[in-house]
Image (cartoon, rainbow, N blue to C red; front, side):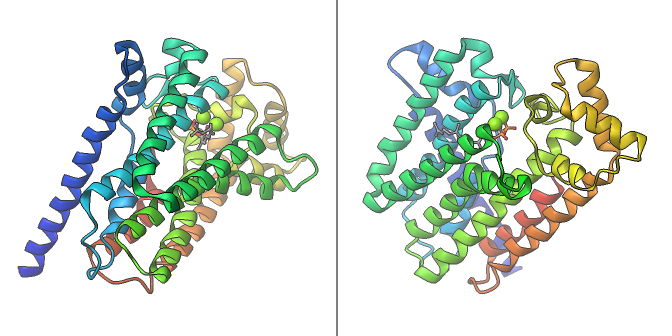
Length: 330
Ligand code: FPP
Ligand code: MG
Ligand code: MG
């Protein structure tokens, strides 16, 4: 009973911190003009999993000795990573010509590309102001993370060239997604004053679970109609992801289904019926299960980084995330 009581109050603390982060996110998106405020709060208010803030909070709670992380710094660190993430989504939806985000109009669909890009810049400026309050070391880490985000996004746009497509894709995923998720876990450890070994383990965990997160996202882009985004966006944009890369690796030109799917993937898929056919052939193809198996393998690797960390509810919650990122369907 005693441990049950402790658990509930620990969960309540986490929930309280996440609520505080939620209000702070909306407050910091306020701008001089109501129109900019509305556009800047748009994607934040539309929801989102808040995966990065959750990692900051959990990582900051890991070590029972140092788990007295100043709440203001926890909130600041969470704001920095979530604002950076949201800013990158404003830009990403312009680049991907996405019309939907988190079940609402994307900012570019609502206000046009110019406003969407500049509002993304505005949110990134806000993130920069907050990270300055945490100190130089955080500013440096944030700058390096930003450089990885941008380079990942450029590499995705430019494509693999002569490099191996699967290796290229995994590097893109590490840079455009895993980098910021690793930084989220690292920031949480740092604000709690965790020792360097704990910081390293959490950063490695974040990098791996961040990769799993994006690989799952890319599978879901094909398999789910409930993401709040348009299914098949990657396919239509011609962006190869794990399922299609595995499909191409193992495609059997003798099979009628495989050659039809190859032809569709090589076409521009601007026709709705073609896109729907490609999606349905992919959904039924073993490459989806192969992709899921790779995701499970990596999520177990993420879990292994937690082995030497202090046991407790925060570590249990981080371990549980290894399951939820694999099984999530939206
Ligand atoms: C979503 O990928 C995009 C990213 C994870 C990173 C985007 C990074 C930039 C645009 C660099 C600029 C960054 C800032 C901070 C201004 P996706 O298109 O595969 O995912 P989706 O399905 O959610 O659209
Ligand atoms: Mg996108
Ligand atoms: Mg994109």
